[in-house]
Each structure stands twice: as C-alpha cells, then as structure tokens.
Image 1 (cartoon, rainbow, N blue to C red):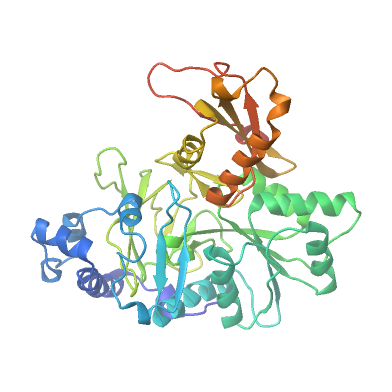
Image 2 (cartoon, rainbow, N blue to C red; image 1 turned 120 degrees about the vertical axis):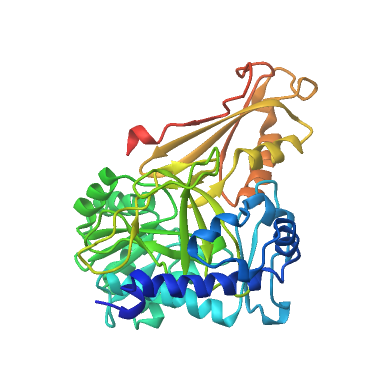
Length: 430
C-alpha cells in the first residue's frame, strides 16, 4: 500500500530535479537565520551557486553545539507568530535544542508518518496504541497526528502502568503499538507473568534506541507481531525520517524531504554507497527551522537501490554513534550532562562512574558518585538526604530516573589520559 505513491517511488532524474529545487529553497530559507547568513557569506556561497546535488559539499556542516548556542530561537527563520508548536531535545549542559514548527511543517511531518504507517499495512479500522512520552518529546505527538491522518483509532496511552497498558490492548482490540523495543519486551514479560495473551496485535513500531536483529526475533516471538524499525530525530521534525517496509533489511529514507550524505566522522570526507560512516542530513522542506548538512552522529550506510517494494533508496540499521551520546529508554543522555549536574553540587567530588544495564528488558542507569572529604564523615548511610538531592537534580536535567550510589572519597578509579566514565553492559543482554 502507498500513501503518496508518486513521492514514495520517485527516482532518477525526476528525484534529482526535485531535490535540487528544494535544496536551493532551503539555502535561501536558511539565509534568513543570522548563523547561516554569516556562514554562507564567509564561504562566499549563495543559493544560485548550488547547481547540482554534488555542490552540497561546498556547504558548511551544522552540529548540535551550534543549535545549543542559538538557544532558544536563534535558528528560527520565520517570525515567532508563525511558529505554532515547539518541541525540544535534552540539552548536553542543561539547555535543550529548541525546534519550531509552522503549520506547513506539521503537515509535512504528518505526511511522513502517514507514509510509514501505510507502508507496513496499517489502514483505517486499525487501533493504534501510542506508548511513548507526550509533551516536548517528539515521539508521542509525531505518531499521534500521522496515525489520525490515515484514519487509525488512536489510544494516547503514553508510558508507564504496564498492566493497564496490557489491559487496554485487549479491551480495545489494539492491532498496533509504538514504543521503545526495550519497553515492548517488558510488556511481553509482564503479560507472561500475569498469564495474559495479546491476540489482536499485528504490528509493532519500535524506535528511539538501538536494537538488534536478535531483539526483533524475541519481540516477534513473544508478542506474536511483526516488528518494524523507526528512525528519526527532533532536529528533522522527529520520528518519520526513515522506516522499514515489509521487505525489511534497511530503512527507506524519504529523499524528497531529506538529502542524505554519509561521511567519515574524523575527516568529513563524503563516502560512497555501502560505506559505513556518520549520516549527515539536510532537510529539504523545513520552514521554521531549516538546517544545512546537520551531523546526526548516527553511524549507518546508504544501501544499494532496488527494494522490491518499489520505494527509494534505504539506509542501513543504525549501528552506533560517532559521539558519546547514550540512549536510555528512548531519551538522549550525554555524559557531559551528568558531569554538569554533579559539578554543580558542593558535596560531590571529582570522580563519578556511570553503569548502564538492561534489567527485565528495561534500561537502568546507576551512577557512582564520590563524596568530597569535607562532607564524608565515615558513614555513607547518613547521607540519604544528599543522595536524594543528587537524584532529583539529575532527573530535572535528564528527564530520567537514575540510581545514585554514594562512595567514599578516593575509591573510584583514576585514569591517565581520557577518562572512561561510562560502562554500558547492555549489549551482552540483548
């Protein structure tokens, strides 16, 4: 099934002409942003200088730090009265990336989600349970409006209260769910513990964190559904950038709305088809917040064209990050965020360690924190108030509950050279 057959199957010269037209428009739109106006002027580039898709290599990269420095509205190219919605990402030092949307942006975003959901077989009459956070996080509302666009019955259940989620799946005849893959496995485990089957489920849409083929097989076996991988990032609207079709083996990226490059993360050199590197995306239709050559930090590759479904080129499954970002329960977390919080608290010493585990299919983060000598009097049990204060401060910034364990001064490892503060133990448990 197709939602927009022409755009979903556009290829060759016709696609190239559309991309070039939209790229020129994007550069002109970005030129309204002081940051880009200065960057383009310094590079001596105008929209008319981009005469082919390959000319995109002349343009400067944009990185997350640039967006952070533009907080809150420095990257908006339209007046604030035309921005009808704002979402944010988590910030690496407490300040988030602010993303604005015009009415046209929201229509484009809903279009992308509608394509994805129609592509896997969802249609009017299906019941869709959206089990991700609503609010500033883009995952909830993004899928919500796209699902309504194609006529699904939407249950905005959000996260938490797993037994109630299971009850709704059965009571409402839910045929499709959207959540992180780790939460889906937790649902399967709870359902098995309470002896409940979920016979109406047919489709599972999973994203916001890395997951393996082994996890896919486990999800499909235990929930008796077909699992699909979803990719997106808030800077590109949110979810909907790329999505698996029923053929599997890679995600279709919507080339009429996104121009994709793969680069060597160390040198910035553009890589060829089939070569693994960092994905760089230039959105081609974003009105409120156009971006040029945004470095996503995600490692993937462009796959050979020619999917049996007839749609355009795919990217491979995301295999990692080129930076130190962690994804915990679908939330982006940087070690620098943790360090920023800890260093703001007078009781905390110089050293900390972060441990990430997968416990009952859910990510758990434990942070060992050294006390300063002047606050430590020999009994860690007497420090519960400090422990709670640290936990609350981390939750305020990360938007995530963490386990904090206070340890004695001098007890954590010291490093010569670059410190290894994060130990991720999840891979062995997939």
